[in-house]
Image (cartoon, rainbow, N blue to C red; front, side):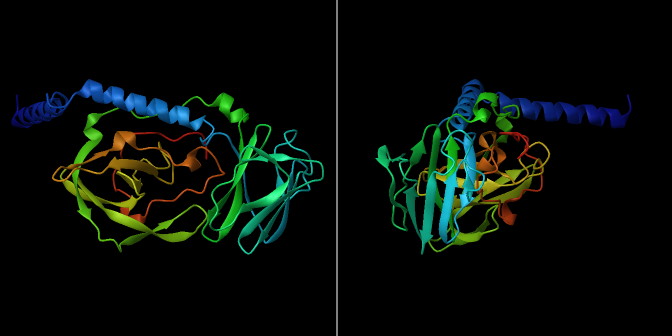
Length: 302
């Protein structure tokens, strides 16, 4: 047997041994971990078809200053699903950042569970008002200087055809340990969304990890909880995963402990499920120069 072949066999054995030691580490329960990720995937699928999920979205309408008519008739500014609301249901008035609703004569909708024909639906200090009629639910959203209406249909045809999100095989090798480089309270990073709006968002720190001998960094966003929010891209995007990146929550580590960056929990942004979402995109420093075959694959053709 020649020297080159001996070397290749020895190298293969060493690699296999290293892989085995990771999978068989007695301090880590691989089966329990696998079950944990399966349950997380099941919850993700259940969320998509819930009332708050993304599969039931039926419209996103941006208000112009002044009167904006709505209803199922095609002559309206905002055309709601046919047969689910009157042709002329009423109008929204946008004036200096305040949105007022007026329904057509004799027509009532429900706002926060109460019959309503008129009233202020949005102002800068208001809480969310949920408007509904039949299977339709809609409410006001604000994205920087744009104010719009997000429409849901709780009887949307897509709810019946949703078959779940494909995922890569669960592999503990993508559950990585790292460290946090904490940022001071004034640090922000630029985040651009699919509308082309770029905003400064608070970044609580940077997650630093090593993959195949190289160090990589992901800037994390602050969502006032016990988790980091990370928007990232990698070389699976636009091939196996959503083209505009994926999201991930990472638990804040306890003092003195490493941070666990689990790419098996990488998930699709709402824009992978609907054209009616306004997803933030990965900042350029969070686009990793290698493929991460872990977490959710792309869904549909959005």
